[in-house]
Length: 185
Image (cartoon, rainbow, N blue to C red; front, side, top):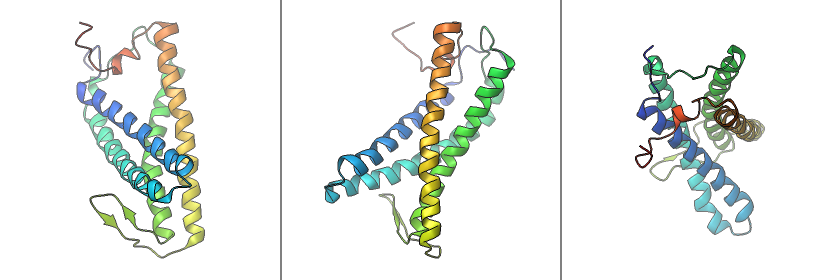
């Protein structure tokens, strides 16, 4: 493994793109469900945006996973190092987040499919290609929502751990994934 100060730029960009897509996806669903629930004509395009952004989260999470595997040898060291148990915990958390961000969109699609709804992603409409089963649809909706809230908690832990390492332990964990700051150099 070569010594680097930061992750490769492509990994940094993909990390923050996925993060922004995730935040926008949550914002869209909360706006549609809670902010505009009395205005269906306004909420509908926001729901479509939620579906589209969810699909983009899935796509970019897949791309990010492949890039991470291809650039595995370019992971920068944490200086000063963290204890082994923290490394194992943080690695496990990141793996669980990747899996969850695969499961959430797939469960959302299966919810819509099993409920007999099409999935409109602006550029293409995917019609339900499975047997309609409202019970299964509700099951997949529960998985979708439960995983989404679990992911929020895991993101908070992930961010909190990085900030704690930056502020308290004074290591480079957070700086490794921060985008380059051209004004800072």
